[in-house]
Image (cartoon, rainbow, N blue to C red; front, top):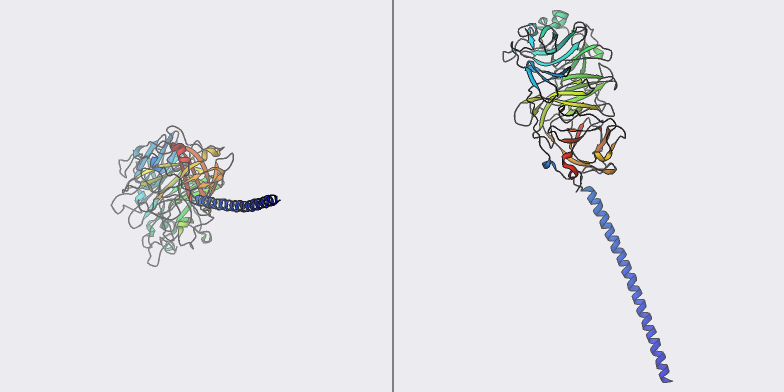
Length: 551
């Protein structure tokens, strides 16, 4: 009996110990599970934080050192050029009686150069009445600046409008004609004189128009009787064009009182008589004022009319022509030939504007892309023609970041963006193998993905050379390496696309082409309506897949 009781006590004690052990084990497991959950939660938070950090610190591979550098030089030193096409031959005419021809816009042959009697481009120009007002320049030589050539069907002549300049700001715009675009051109008449003072104004075309007494009362002079160059124009940089109704116009001006325009008689090529209209800023002698004030930098105007868009596009240059002068190219447009000419932000250059650098789309400034062996500086004096194949070609001169003042001719293609603004190609036209043609249906998104080198010129007038920053256009419209809110999108079935950088949207086009080193590139060129800035983005296809990865 005693043994039975001891056995019962032992069994109860065992059950009690076993139950207590199970309880302790269960609590341990619960604590362990809670610890595991907390640990996993912490790991998840850390991963999320790391992911957010990664998003903010994405770095795009800069492979610019692997990009082949080009040093394209066409050895065509033509300044202040215009472009004219006759058959399959392109003619470039510039200051100093220079001219060259090309069949491909890449290789040029100089056919004339130098303001001398031996220059076959002209016949009997030097010593003619072209210099009757301005005379010789400070170096005691004849000058010849910034020509423009147009064919006048009424006159059945090739007409060249050009400027001559002497000492003390005297200048004249002149007309010469020829039966062939290659010349020889013969002087016809002076179109306009400027830089005259009250005492010598009678010697000019203005004196001939008004007479000495009336001229003295015209308001062209300051209190000392000197020419008021802050409010009236310089007879320089003429260009001539036809408007939508077939009327002939000349736009001109350099610094001084800005840019003016005059309607011309198609039968004579000379100005049509007009009356003063002060409210409309129309002067009976100088014509209609359209841009620029106060002897601020603005010159070399050129106007292109595009019927489909319904706009007149005005191109000018700001800055100074020297390599450190910050010379650039600006764009405006208007629905009417006489203005108002507005920029992409809807601004016009009025007298109230103190800093005009923010007015006008800065189409081209100083820059250096990864494929450029040296930077391009002081590109300016723009002119545009419509080629026989419908392309719009921008011609200008440029200098280089080489410590010299050498200059050369450059030809770029222009394209319309979705908003009807002309955007420029970052590379010289290359017609040798294949023309750069815009694919009207656009490219598939996959072909547009990758690493791009972006030039952002700003709007300031500066000698700074803009270097490229690198971003990646990724899937789902992401722009990596830029701001967190930046994105890109293509317009389906069209060549248009938008890229948003720093919360500013650039409307432009994509085009696959050759750069100046003859290598394949994909190019975006666009304009922002919010800051008047034009950008270029270039993807170098020679990098292959290596250029398409963020790290």
